[in-house]
Length: 109
Image (cartoon, rainbow, N blue to C red; front, side, top):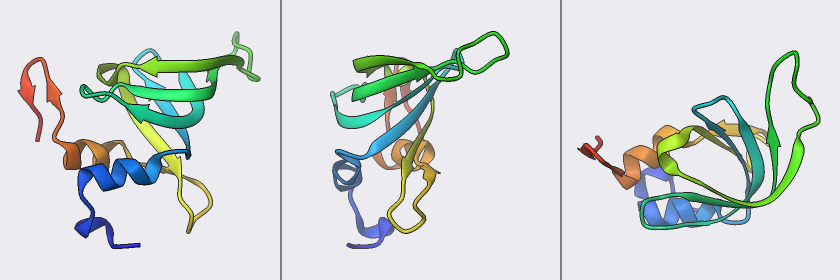
């Protein structure tokens, strides 16, 4: 596999296909599921997903959601298990930099 510097944004997204992602959104919920794809505004599609809410009053076991589309504007962090490390790694900033997302305010840098 080529180094991260030489991969295009599309290649990096393709590398994440069929990998388990942990996605944290603005309200604190965490979704754990298999990355199945994205659309043009980069909404994330997860399949076989579970939802977790952290807190003293919440169910720590989560609940099964199945398939979910998570709007990119709600995403705080995206983590994927790396093959080398065997643990989840923060990919949100790398994806955001490479893809140069478009928000309602215009492109981010």
